[in-house]
Length: 178
Picture 1: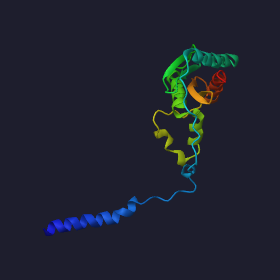
Picture 2: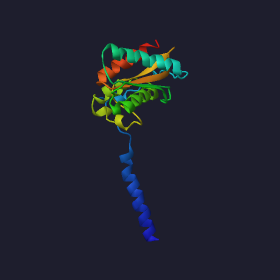
Picture 3: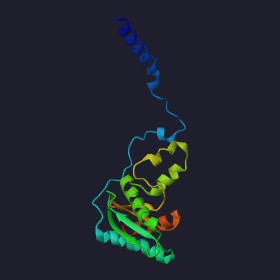
Picture 4: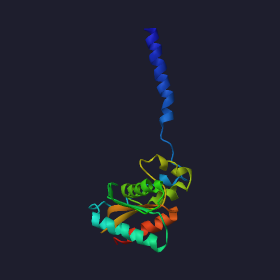
């Protein structure tokens, strides 16, 4: 009985002492993630992009690449879910760009923002170090949402050039639905 009493006392003391370890941490005024906005600025999803429209988006992107003589671009167009609707691969593209372009489009659609946003936030330092832990995110420019009537109908992802070249081509595809 004495042994049980001592055990219970020891556990009670341990819980009492450790309670402070679970106290709420004070907000860091230097951390931009601490700000709590009054409203969310979220672009809603709309009806998924059709194959016909996806082809127009890809054609506009491919035309921009041809105009600039940028070779080897891969262009992916996805639905709001991130599922592939249309894909176009230029001759001579690097093999990695096939999946990278699809990944950029998927990230842009599922997270409802251009992939360059992730790239820029990651560059802001330690407060955004959590970004690589997000599921299925690629933090490289070249993925952009396709918005029609204020709703996301899909996204385009481009890979094959530098990140900035990919983004220029991607933005040209976005312009096809505006």
